[in-house]
Image 1: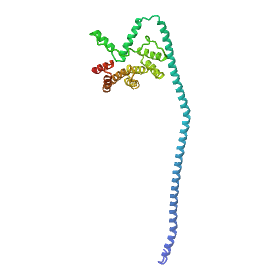
Image 2: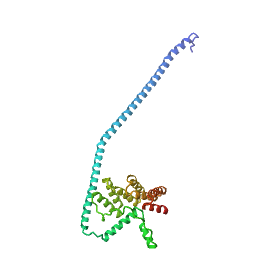
Image 3: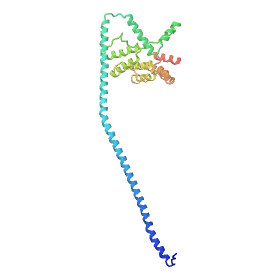
Image 4: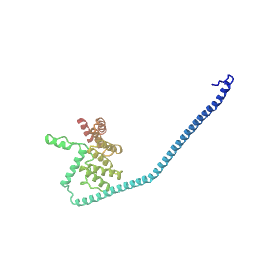
Amino acid sequence: MRRFSSAAWPVLCICICALIAPAGCASKKDVESIQYQTHRDRQESRKLFKQLEEDLVQTQDKLKQEIEKSKAPVQQKQANIWAEMENLRLQVAKIQGELEAVKMRLAERSRAQNATMTMQEAGERIKAMELVLEHQFDVDLKAARQKAAAGPAAPAVEQPEQGPEPDASAEQPQDPAKALYDKAYARFKQGKYDDARRFWAEFVKAFPQNDLTPNALFWQGECFYQSGEYGKAVLTYQEVIEKHPKSSKYRPALLKQGIAFYRMGKNKPGQVILQKLIDGFPSSAEAARAKKFIEEN
């Protein structure tokens, strides 16, 4: 084996370092280049995603605007159709009232020759009075008749100051409003509460300034009451109380609203309303009925 002299060793080391050094430098530059390229690729990807998101938002906004534009004519058309139907409905209500008025006038002429009240007419008036007692004063006439048959007669209930509710067969309407009102009242007497309430609602809408409007509102509430919808009855009676405090149906509305609260199981507000009636109108028939109801409940 050939041996190097001590003087040759430094020269050999320098040669080896010269060969190794360039290879090490080249590897570091490659790594830095790859890292830089990776960083640029990430930035480009982020920009691309951001641009895509913005484009998507713009597309959604445009689509929403197009949808709203396409809906607007349809909505306007629906509104116009609804308005036309509402107008036609009111016209039909008035025409029905006019037809009923014509029928009633013809019937009145046929009975004008006989001024004496027939037994049938007297019976109708009695039924009208009983209807008022049963509904306006919440008097159970059936129970009263049974009690009278079993023992001493029950004390009479004070009659309403304004008299019984008008009856279609006894008092003939002179205008379309009265005819429509009587038509609703006739349905109520037959126990057709949904039909009666619908006709009275038509009346209130077609003839809001009529003197019978408070009555129509009250009897709408009574339709709800008889159908067991006491919450709706309370709200309808409240319309009479708030809007028509000077009408003949103000006291009956207070009375029936208080009783309706009792029927709902809300005795405390019911008692407050009945006491308000008693304090405000102590000598009225409604106050007497309210006192009796509170005592019994």
